[in-house]
Image 1 (cartoon, helix red, strand yellow):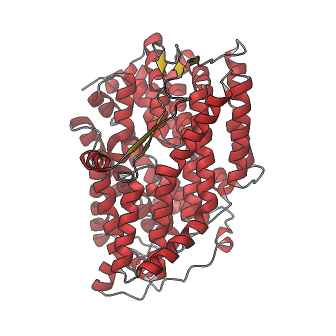
Image 2 (tube, helix red, strand yellow):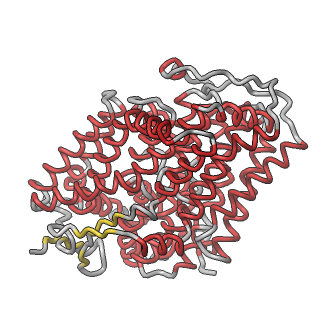
Image 3 (cartoon, one colour):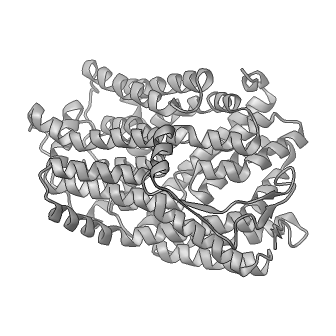
Amino acid sequence: MVWQQLYDPFNNIWLSSAVAAIPVVVMLVGLGFMHMKAHIAAGLGLGSALLIAIFVFGMPASMAGNATLYGAMFGLLPIGWIVLNIIFLHQLTTENGSFKVLQQSLTGITDDRRLQLLLIAFSFGAFFEGAAGFGTPVAVTGAILIGLGFSPLAASGLALIANTAPVAYGALGTPVIALAAVTGLDLGELSGMIGRQLPFFSLLVPFWLIWAFAGFRGMIQIWPAIFVAGITFAVPQYLVSNFHGPWLVDVVAAIVSMISLILFLKVWKPKQVWTSTALKGRKDDSASQVPAAEPVDAAVRPSGRAVFAAWLPWIILTVFVFIWGIPDVKKWLDGISIVKIPFSGLHNLIEKMPPVVAEPHKEAAIYSLNWLSATGSGIFIAAILSGLLMKFNLGKLFAIYWRTIKLVRLSLLTIVIMLGLGYLTRYSGLDATLGLAFANTGSLYPLFGTLLGWLGVALTGSDTAANVLFGGLQKVTAQQLGLNPILMAAANSSGGVMGKMIDAQSIVVASTATRWFGHEGDILRYVFFHSIALAVLVGFLVTLQAYVFPFTALVH
């Protein structure tokens, strides 16, 4: 029996939306204000979502359970699998001392903490977003920053802020490809439109990042380096997205940005070296809440051979992540082994209804157990290969892996619960109800439609999922209001990138990577302002494109 989603059970969209928002509010209040452990707050959010989906929105209980289980499995693979293996690699490099050498090599490029942050969190992180996505950049850069001596709050929060502008083209353009698929709009036109929105923020975000870390004066002192990192990312991002396509946007832009910044730092130095690793102007005692890292002696310069050995695991990781992200490689690996598991009590038994979609649409629910092609599997192989090159025997590798599992077990549980909540809100239609409230904002829709993308990523943890969720609604609403549907579909993705820093999944990844377990609420409170402020700025840009400078929204 097919169940059709109900979006307005109270015949009042604002009241229905308020009730649909309860699970998200419960989770965020629990995390941000009541200082609950993340898995407990997520569990309460999931419990309230089940009650509302079943007893208010009329979702059959069996379907609600299946939707939750579907999301939980997605939380384990691919998300949890990535986190587990990134932390495993970090544990290996810490165990044999090569991570300390890597830290020393980075201080060799620059011992200014602001510039290290710019290079690692923004430029280096953007490469991992482009190649893999799904939490990989935050896991990698958070681990490196905490190893360099940044406080846990700084390492977590700043890694999240930096991982914004590249998100729309993450995982080799997956969010844009998904957006084109669900809307039926031209892929090249969507890629180009997003590429005429995000480059402004690719230039702004590095300045914002350093301002958040070192304050305005600290930012101004190194503005030339920030400008170089931002402009050399923004220009390739615009060019590749508009004249090639969405696939290699982040990879090309990140490589150009990294190389340009490193070369620039060979000829330019700040007048004053910034040595503090804590957040300026903010009480930050988080460093006392984790085991103290052994300080790096900036005077020690390791040999070239030692530096290469220290970077080799991360080079191997980069190569494997990039290879695993290539569609033809994924297809080949899936040809070797993939298990597709249809959820018989859910698959094609739920219909999305107008006005969320143009016509009734059945929702698929097939879980792909792609254990070979999953990004986390590439990371796992990279970690094992690196461990063997670091002279660990198989017994030692197994012992460290088991220790890593114990270290991240609660984080994995949290991710599983949160993905269960995300998928339940999607299949029950709770998130679509929230979307319809945004769609009722009339002439203000360019702003609120952009914020709808932000909300979608905050709820689902994925720009891809948010595009699948709200892409059709953006197109239909834009057509009804006489707006450019390509503009508003693109705004969903561009606005969504700013929601990435507050989605619960990313916050758990950040707290795990920095080993600041149980402090997800502290991270959420820190990044929330940055997230909503940047999302509103994206909304203002889209509004200008819609009403003031419509020529910027013309299709190339």
